[in-house]
Length: 450
Image (cartoon, rainbow, N blue to C red; front, side, top):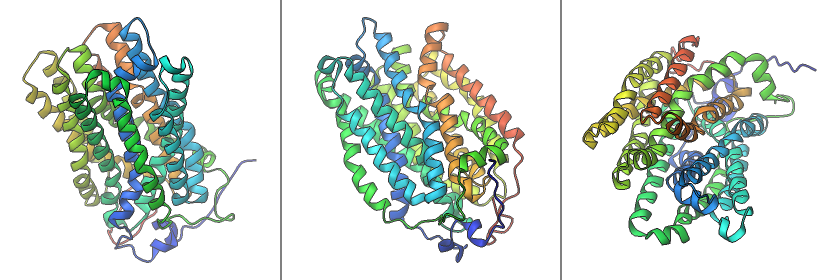
């Protein structure tokens, strides 16, 4: 039987919950709350980062092969396997967030994430357990991917709803800031352990250290999340039976455009921050110590720029113009970035170009989050945000390293990553042009239904 819903939006619908409807001009958030909400996404990015940085070691330990290329390809494929479960996680956990509340969903997600990280951190190697080793590793990556599928939807929706519209961009920017901080920490861990530990120590136990440290932080995040206020109160009479089904039936166009519009941003993030060190070492035969500077620069900018991108978004009535402008400028930068590496120009040329591209990427990321969130009504907002993000990441971001590694092998062209990024940029640009955005926030003190 077809599910239908009809309701007249109250002020609580507009802001997110009755608790927050009383004060549109002020936020009910604290630094502690913001950290607790974004900690899950940060830890997810951190785990993905350290896995990427140690992919060569993981490939040898869990997927031994006579050909180093095969071991690396299997390792980065396992990196991508975690993304296979994201769409399923986005539907299941996004539904849960819209039916039972954002806080309840974030608490559940943190618990699932902890189990996934534990499997990866303590998985036996192939020499210790044979075929069970890669099975345990893949199981951990699948569980991580499932939990990550709902994390962004629930957490980012909470950030949007936890206060008035005047500072909505600032709050949502914490999501990207957490990713930058996590990627920076992951890169620093990779560089530090590679510098201070011998190759034998890294293979024996050193690669496990970053995962164990991330696992140790999760109980703190789980405890703090349980103390958060709820921004989305539900009851059996108001909650939709199946938000994902309603989303597909009534908001299909926005869902599909959001998926394609987000491809460029997620692909840039995973290639520039995570894949670049492996590309510079394995393809361009550059020292690992030099390659890490690229990832560190990109991660640092992802830590610093989103806040200002959020403030800029809060001062503009529309998201689409700034997104199109950033997409066009970024498209122009892609080829020169990889050309400076291929032709052996001084490293600072590459760093400057990547820095410019990352500034654009982070400004547009906050605006993109807002554009998507404001396009879905509250009863399906968390599920909508989760599905858009999870599917776009899974289609192109999660398998970006695998796709680019395969393209490099097939074409034998060092510029293959540039082609891949340019293709993704064009797809996203077309989706943004087709997006029909409402005018939002015509009055900073007036809540409007997004």
